[in-house]
Image (cartoon, rainbow, N blue to C red; front, side):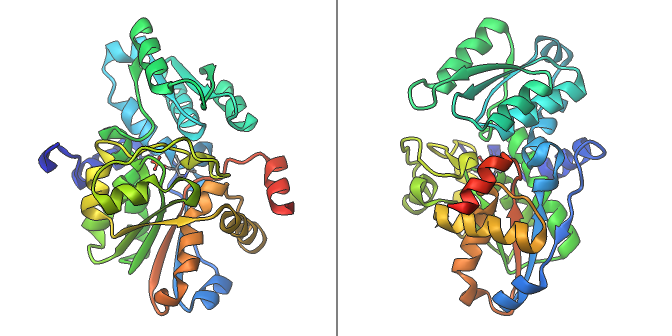
Amino acid sequence: MADTALPTYDDVIAAASRIAGHARHTPVMTSRILDEEFGAQVFFKCENLQRMGAFKFRGAFNALSKFTPAQRQAGVIAFSSGNHAQGIALSARMLGIPATILMPQDAPASKIDATRGYGAEVVIFDRFKDDREKLCRALAEQRGMTLIPPYDHADVLAGQGTAAKELFEEAGPLDAFFVPLGGGGLLSGSALATRALSPACKLYGVEPEAGNDGQQSFRTGSIVHIDTPKTIADGAQTQHLGNITFPIIRRDVDDVLTATDAELVEGMRFMASRMKLLVEPTGCLGLAAARRMKADLRGKRVGVLLSGGNVDLARFCSLLAA
Ligand SMILES: *Cc1c(COP(=O)(O)O)cnc(C)c1O
């Protein structure tokens, strides 16, 4: 795809005005203890406090807001391990659009329940056997519904970019910014905002070490496909970057880093005990990578995106106890 066909920062600005008054303007928080540990100023963008508990509400609401009357009537269909499902389900309910969501049978119970609670029809599939995209496309065709994918969609990624836009507008330009990476909707949208508002900022995507397809793709220059990785970061268990997200990431991101499950658990512990914030494993990817790099961050202004907070309390406790 030619670069000119890719979404731009103007699309992020348009998304920001569409979601205004519907999405929460989440807080930017700091920690004196962490600043001392890093010898730096660290700004956390708290999307764990976003509506339905993750940034995905932004992209979902933006995409659904652009539906024509005919699309609104026929409804939306989506596939997701959880947060995109909830984002679509809640946005659909707010906009009066019927929603069908395909979810893996091993998705956290809280995410399945919340999606049903928002009034969506949930169809369960086996994430290690079924081709969810194929299944979803077949259902979409059968029911005449519009498919909104979790990351590889211009309106979705433009919506996700509004969180970074808010961070830079509130915290000012940064030296480094760490963003969780699954399929790249959040990272590519954040990249558009970063290059517009803080062009010199080093921008890092961070994915689970068990599934570093994004890192391989970024470094080799073509999209690498992997099997569904086994990691506690269920929001980033993606198998490949997208055809729209990858060229933006390749152009605008400085590097893709990884974090281990043990580092994510340490991040969850720090967030809960020191900052009183409940963050899901995937949401701690940025903090984990920043910690690994902290020697290089001394004296700098650092942004960390906390992408979500949806984790069963029982699971949260067992992860911390292990
Ligand atoms: C979806 C998700 C991600 C990854 O976002 P992509 O747009 O797929 O890269 C990161 N963190 C959380 C909490 C998520 O729900």
